[in-house]
Image 1: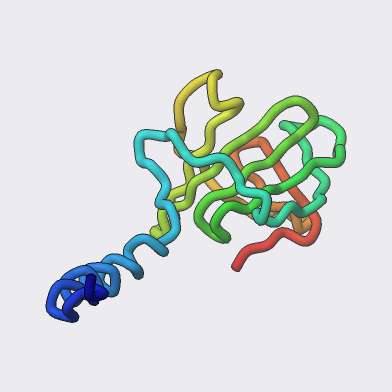
Image 2 (image 1 turned 180 degrees about the horizontal axis):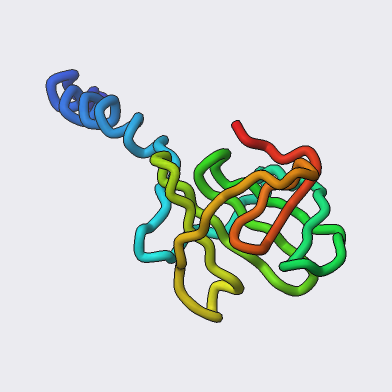
Length: 129
């Protein structure tokens, strides 16, 4: 029996399809506007900060950045706050994913150099970009 070698003509469409779809498959996941965001990956940077709820005391917290400037989380004690920024200045926040939906919040800088979102403030080396 003679060895069968596939014709290049048969493989050309497969190679072209792989070349076209390769970059699409490598794109990062986008935030779902409906609110079902992917969880942080093991490579998501975690930054130690200090946080304050309303006028309460400062306490250690952790910021996990899924997409810098776009999606991040703050873990303050047992509470988790998810954030989304759409690039136009609008920031949305939700507390403890199962507890409720997204709400728009205002981002402001305080006199003590903390960044606040409607009563939740963080200070420290906040990754902005």
